[in-house]
Image (cartoon, rainbow over all chains, first blue to last red; front, side, top):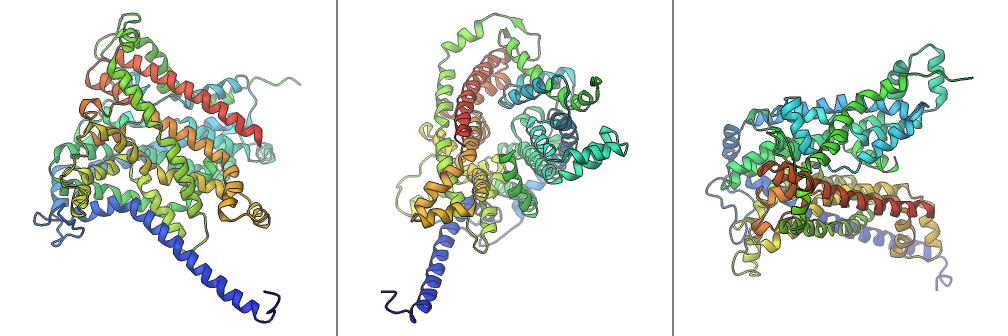
Length: 292
Length: 291
């Protein structure tokens, strides 16, 4: 049939593929939007609930999403009852402190594992590999003992930073990155009289910057969202991180849904902004992590 | 030429190794020791031999927790299927796709505590879900979602799945983007439709990600704690309906001051994890042989 109308055909096909394309895209946008609604709906609902005053029901039949008389009262109440700025301060300090120190420790360790030959390298490598599967909860009992009796950092944020100073995942990630750095580059540095430390700092680290960014983001988010160990360590309100503080809030305001909603909103929005700013790195980072 | 022995590599390694020795290796040895003792962290441990393990064997709550932990592993196949499908859906070049990907990632970023509290608010007896179902006439009476033992574990698992969607989707997406476009073109020339293309090109191409997601999500499922803690208010649910191995470990060690017994639970957890990892490694080796 197509051959029968040689002059007529191209135009029709262009138009029909175009409508087909538009329809297809519309279909995918519908699917994507439905999933997006499912993903963020709880947050949207919590967000609007946090602005509801006493006269706006949390739940009614039929449900009411938007507050009729929006108010900041819930935020003020939560803010007055809990040291929210401290929660943020502690979380930021713990996460940033861990990221900086952890990257120094792990990238130092990754260099010899990637580029040097020495006795015991394979043994160390496999030892590290084996620790991968150790559940963190298993080590929490002796770590608790260490915190209370040995290091005496119980109820301080040092207790969160110290055990996180070196993570096997980051050592492997950076080892993989270092391995892809050409040996010539390192040799050239050594010719110029650079020490190993200098090679590590001025040659290797700048080259693997994307991997460092990945490791930094994942370490930051892991520390920011960690709850199990911080909940064991932190008891004074002013020493709590956001996650532990949120749970403390949940315990305090069991019947105050509007207040809890305000607390959740307050703590989630900054991390979402952080994520949106760094989104590109997240996607690339996950890709890199799997390959490595 | 004999190579001179050099301290340098060891110096580079030592800071990290000291940390890992202190916070991973020492604790493993210590947990093994504690598991043979009566111990409450505050006072010195007293050797009691195999008593903790004997008690474990007849401890109904422990076996219940084990059963729950294994049930929890069901999240892994669900996550694999859903996240692979989701990755295929978002792996298309249409305007605004990055915004959608970012939105799907928001629950991952927000942390299990904030997400868990949001869910708790919605599932409350006076919460949104009941209000919604009542107004549609599906329910006559509100359901106590969080107080009904039969629902504790399924709700926690749903929460885990919901939070994991974005995370594992991103892993699969990264995998999809590594698959050469030529393979899809070749499949098209061979007469594959859209569905067959994914069956014949995407699935085999995603094998490394498949293994990774299986390993990571099943280990995470065995170690689940936060979801249970938040949904049950730290109590583990009515009739211990939310007890998992890790939750029971935590409760024994840090709520009931039975750290010796908890150490024995920890060893059990380690054995399961090891067994699981060996299965996973086997799986992984078979995967790489094929390539």
